[in-house]
Picture 1: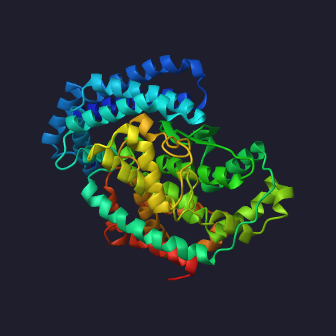
Picture 2: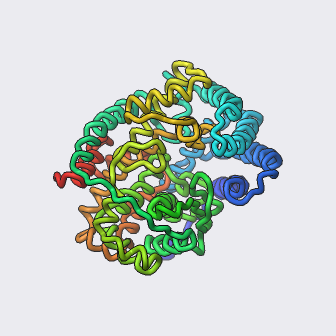
Length: 502
């Protein structure tokens, strides 16, 4: 008996085709934004803002068009003959479209232009330590974020609507208690770790940028990053972006007296890229071909940067690799020296340079500031002072200038409010996932010490990457571990690392 495959409904074929066309517009927009931060000449900034404004409006109009909305609605109302994957794509697409239709094309265009313009102003203000010049742009961005929250709607706090953009299903009342407990646990750990660690010996070595690039590229290939589908470039504020299903680009920055800074940044962005390289290409442009919340995205970067990249086995691997790229400097180093430098704990001013233990406190400070902006109405003029107060309270350090304070991060100048909490949540997910990896892969530390990362990447492909948006973060955590997401696995991981506690 011959069994004939049933042809998918024409409406379903139309859905996938239109979804792909919307994705194409999004990729073009990403090219403009990638170039803006990597290669664009300064005097092109004003016209680039208009280009980004136009493409953002066009992409939003296509994604929220009446014809596409009606097509998805009709499929949603008659899903009996669709596969489970098709049903999930349709349901999640409908949810996204209905949320997107609450924002007008005009508003989306204004927000995109404001973001592009503020980014350029921020790059100059940061160089000159001049918050006053960028303050009007930040005010506009906050007002746009408040308008967005009102348009999207929320039950309790305006901030919840912004958080939903990055963390599906989360609210301040859900995440703040978890992160507050995390902060308290970290504040207790920091002095305990400091009490037992020896001081760092100052390094006088110079690590040439060209050799650092070669080192980073070598390690990227070891991890499984494919340069035929990506690039490694230099920028002010490192990031990873997707310009197409086989175009995942990484950026980093270099400091010639600290090669580890660039390496850790590269490992971080590689985690993001490897996640996106593991998505199912046949579903490109649809929820099953898209990454989940930014906290899951961040968990992938934290696994490679911190849990693997700052581990003792990785220090052994790195020590052998350094002989090739920094033969002179490597003679003064041991794996123990490398591990000590990677894991020296001391509260500092700059989030992206923070040690693994104090990092999440930087995020908690930003969460408090964002909640004060959107719930308590903290004026923009008072942000630098409030920033200093919170750093004094939570990390016991003084912020000497705005360059190392309110101007250090790009997110707010790109209208990215609600983004920061995902970094700390990503730390929590990363520890939970690494527990699962250790249970699955025998002799994991030996593999890492030998520079063999294939089994780790394969586990992530099978258990995280391939699912796309099938599971929300908390659902995925429970599926993997059988437990709800808490701060406990991450704090236990740190105690095991620094105090050998099981």
